[in-house]
Image (cartoon, rainbow over all chains, first blue to last red; front, side, top):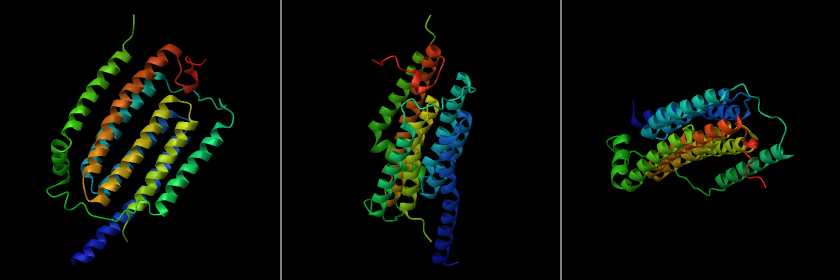
Length: 179
Length: 101
């Protein structure tokens, strides 16, 4: 097989996966917002996170895709489900609006935001050219990201560690039952 | 046919808008949190798309840091929710009105 044919085959595969994942991501996101039951929302969000991990693989970001599955779809969503179960799921959400006309206004404003972003995309504000990460991913994506993390972004990396420790301590303090 | 960066940015924009709708119309604080997570993920998708268009990995590193901050935010946020639930027996955002004048 010549290189050109191979390239088209991989592009076709990318297109196919994208066509499957993109509507699935949008539908699961919509379902999450519209679902009455908070547990269904959480499970739909897990599916959505897996779709995003698929996008990351298509975009040559294998490390972030793995982190997405492990941290988001794994740890964070388990935490969400745990708190949902802890606080009880039988409660019905109030259907009455607290502020009159808030829901139509919210949907209208969000549509406005979406139209604005799509307009910016159509006008070519970002002017994104399809490029390849083949040079940057030399020797593997994980190695390349790790090299960047431990050289150029060392300070941010250490700060992130401190942030996580503070968050863990904060959760302990907040969760403690006061006598 | 090739999937251009615009397609990914479009999906990212749609997911972000859906997250905004969710934050604005849902009353359950946990679901509001999930919608915030959805918005963070939509932005992550943009970051990684731009990383590819720039041919550099900095966008991926930034997305990684966004995930770290999101994890910290979820831990503290859910801790606050549990603390509020103990006081008010409700997770509705409308019941948290102690500061109301």
